[in-house]
Length: 233
Image (cartoon, rainbow, N blue to C red; front, side):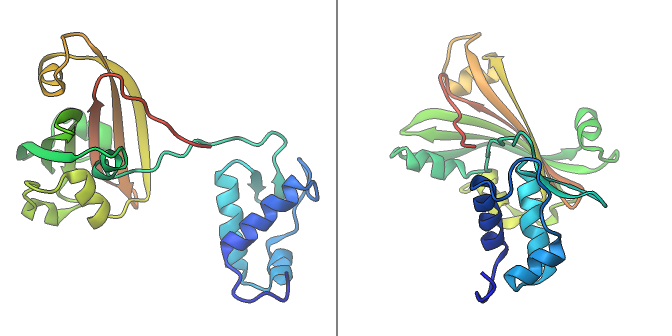
């Protein structure tokens, strides 16, 4: 591959995976150094570094300072949970999407959210409640808190026609996220908005996103009865 031009990190990543699968580099074996791989592929060391970093994040290799890079003995499979646009999810089901803003208020950050996100007292938060429908049936009730400090221009957005999920993905980058899943009983607001009997078990997802260590948003999404989440690994 030394004669190829414009080698990207994806090319190196795929070739490393191929060599591992072909047992050229079996489990536990030590890979060449970044400098050696850069010379072989005819690219910058930074390109090799990015490829190996991604493979390490996927659990395929391990990297240790002064210890080199090795193929893991038991590769770890990692599920992929992309942050998707709920509108697109519904339309991919060949259903008609409808969005409705339930409430929008700017408030001082509540104490429980200060503790969760590590925010200072008095920080302003935009609190939103929204409904997403598929073919006029309740699909998801979304309750979201957005840090005004992290996203100052959010105060100018009405969210009357575009949901915060879709708006944030187009307007604000994020560097990492934390996700939690749970089953919750339908009570009060949830049973009303999702049109289910009291106590109905519902799938709920909570997600916090950050950008460069600054918390951006915390969202709690509760789905219709019988909802299933699928992923690949």
